[in-house]
Image (tube, helix red, strand yellow):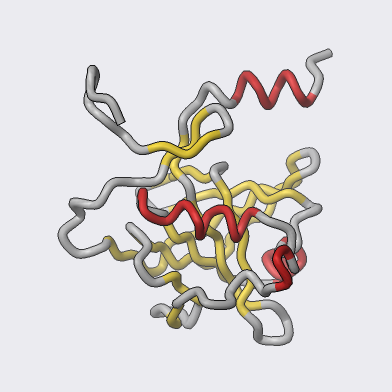
Length: 169
């Protein structure tokens, strides 16, 4: 049987974009996590999915909430990704301390400066091993004006950005 370390190593060969999933906890505080296991599902209706580990600090809030937001990060937002990937209380701070955010159309906490944002109503939550697969219907979406910004990518355990063949970065 394939072990988790080997599985993670092999899947690391698949480059993915980086998102921060946000919602409100039952006490009305913003909560979020970094996720690269995100994908579109359907155009009609517009559906996306995100896979969230049961051990994640934000998992109970996502499970209890009827809505979540997807903040697609730009290449200049690596520090935000790292902050939302870290356990709560790392460096003695709340994940949202010093992070600029504002309520979106559905009232969800939306990270300022994200490359694109989607606000979703949760329509399904499927068990998936040690994760839950949340399927959301997109109720509102927006892209950063100008859309010339580059996305933040994750590949083989490192952050990167797209580049043309032969170009060195």
